[in-house]
Length: 336
Figure (cartoon, rainbow, N blue to C red):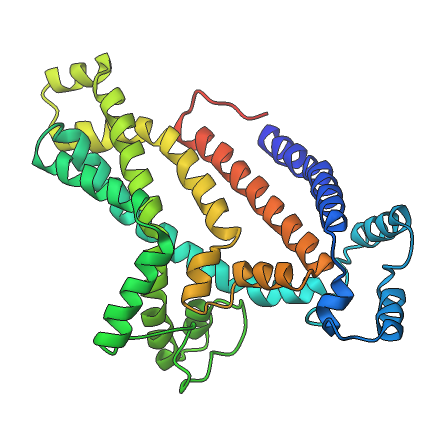
């Protein structure tokens, strides 16, 4: 019951966060010295057309009235209509967000699968060849620009080797029947093995590019945390009692070392989900990052605000999951 009460309080705190984000985004977008209607119609639009659409979208009303009308719609779950796509913003987010979830999840899995072993190897072989190799890997991961790495891999894999290119699936293959919006999951649920193979192949490159930097960060965090834990008295005591090094590392040291690493993983996932703009742009991945960039170019105020609210909710959810993971990893932590 204490845990349930904690989760409910955290979810309730999401309400002022959403109000704050919506208010801040509303103010910033209205301070931009440009007219979204002119951006939509073009600079040669007739004044009568501009005035008609401003009236349609309520942009001719005083700012305070626009604000209260928007907040009233938001309270009823309505994020407004996109000026650019002419569709409800909520429908756009439902359409684009699953692609980002799929890409970000694959990137995070890649980061964990490689980051954890590299960090452990680096910590258990401190100042030796594996540690130096892991350090070079980490430095290159955080130093290489995402756009450069993405373009390089596209040139080598797609142009030179004829491998998979852009998008989520091969153009000659029909996407799987939509259930969750995640091509890999939907392909499995519908037993569409051809779509599954194509979507997995197309997922590899962008997931690697997006997850490389996160892998480096996780690796260094695991190394630092493991070195601190391995210097504790209970680790020396475990070794003195004759426990194998494998049991000492993976059963006694790793779990305690994972507490700060969990924070990095959780926040990294929130960051990835908020929209990997460069990766999605380079690989023509139809995710929330590209949607947000296009909305900014079009001065699409409802879409910008709706996407900002979604990103805020993602970060709050990621922090909540991290706090719950703390209680699992360390029994001394009580949430209530």
